[in-house]
Length: 110
Image 1 (cartoon, helix red, strand yellow):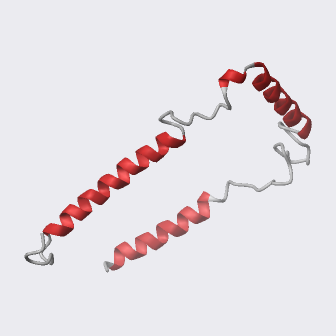
Image 2 (cartoon, one colour; image 1 turned 90 degrees about the vertical axis):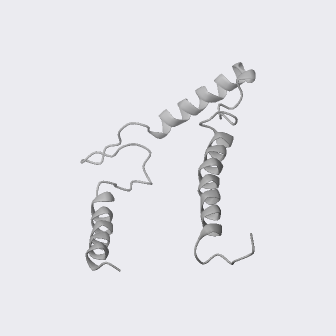
Image 3 (tube, rainbow, N blue to C red; image 1 turned 120 degrees about the vertical axis):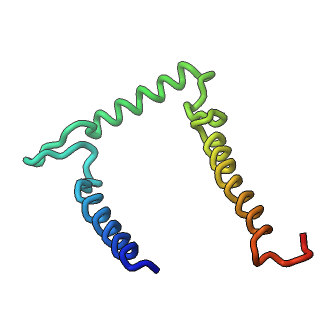
């Protein structure tokens, strides 16, 4: 393998790991943003409960609207699956086609 490429790859992984996660602070036990003095910011428990209550009321008032999850939309579940199948399936077809034409392909077998 090319030594400079290997060294650059290792350095890139190190730098991305070091700087990529440095800005993420884990406050899993708090619902809101925590300030320097320990005060809780937005999205407290009471606010979350009120938002959940409003969401339940909105669904009860509009049952024809569904859950809000776009299953058949391009940005929904099946849309994401279709896009993934198209991309990875296309790559697989190209690789299988190229594999049959290579110099190591068995002679006389298709």
